[in-house]
Image (cartoon, rainbow, N blue to C red):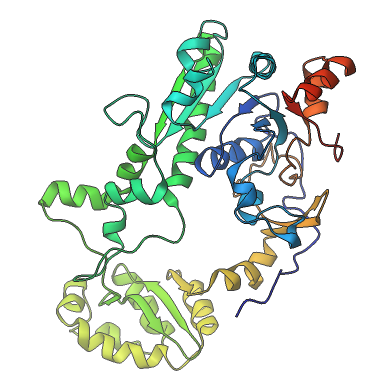
Length: 419
């Protein structure tokens, strides 16, 4: 049953804070929803300044998906992918708003957008329209199908693209229908690919002095995510299927005294370590199990011996035993159990960040540990328009009269909190 908001430590990760790797890089971020914000959050985590440009009326669509009173009226979806950013609320439909946007782009190293193809073109902000004006700009577009090809104008969404690319097919056992994945990995990996492409383009600019267009398609990403399963089809002509729950490695998920674990025993050495950890070294000498092929031929006989042994102890017991002898082993946990377990706390991977309306909001640490440029303390995702006045005054040099006039016309929106 749901138990309400979970208390998390009032601390932030990576105590050895220092200069971040991307300090000095500025990103003007027009993206919304998931793939684009996920990618720009990566750049922000690594030290880039991310200026998130949002519509003054509603902002990023994820702000209301759904709004949560326990989070100061923000949504967990929005908070999870927009930390380390500044929010500037600008109406790009107005001439004055587009002028503000062009001024922002003039200060930037990188522009990121994930609209359908026609949107930025309608505003005169597509790559072809501005590349000559800003020759050093890295312009990254993330879309369902890329900016070329017969589907270039089509809208894309994780569930749709992943279905088309065969990803959902792999989430099905024989004679069952595919299941949509719980985490939208096509979106998140497209965001990762965008960040990688941007970093590569920044490196190339160091040599050439010129920016370029980085075109990231979710469909391309999803096909690449098929990995060795895709190659299996190309080599055999047969569609790969989901791996069975257990096999004779032993490999797979096994019931314990209080739950279940997943293990992988991949060679003879690992099997020997497993047999000794289980208290049954005689399995090693048993001619049925002494070789990989023997274990394959006599898999069910081995599993009949193995299952009751595993069921006799707890998941934590076997996790400790197997990890100690280099056998890959993991406890099957719910997301809540993973987020609150001892190891997550030991590594300081969940923490609270100060927030202007909620007091604090929870956050999951970024996964980058750089020894020389560990980065600064993370900052919670901004309120809509929280930094409009600050950015226009300090970065663009607009005076109070000009900012007030823009606000009065509706071309920008100001927010008192954080201004």
